[in-house]
Image (cartoon, rainbow, N blue to C red; front, side, top):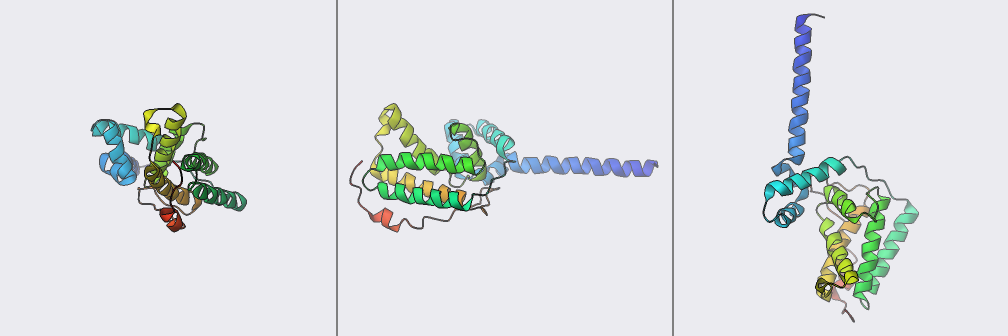
Length: 210
């Protein structure tokens, strides 16, 4: 092999490596993370008391661990069952909002598990993975889970008002729609769910209890 050919091969290898580095920076660098995570980026920075570097390290670690996850398609029968369970929880909310929240919390965890995300028993790990692929709507799951767990633990935060719970349900519905959609795209945080269709009556119905 001639010296010229060897030099060309070395240049190609170096260029390929540089391209990979730039691609990784675009995904895990500050601006790339902002694009990918959207509001979740800001929430993570706030949770780190404004320390953007610490927040980016956390979010970058999420991408490194869960970025290659491939979501599994849902079987038609399972999809119908999940949709029926959501409808039942939505209807239950009118009389028993907290119980409905528990139903939704469990349902979201199960659907995420069926799509190939970490098991519902590992909520934090499951949430991190969801935030990588469904950043635009994952906060709804967090809000619902927080209401449910604080109530179970009997902390002062368990006194969430019905309007707060309604808003959490609405936001959680967007994530549910994303998980129901096999064609969902959110690699850069730009994915969107099917909206809040079917919630017109839910928005207007009075809640009998809290």
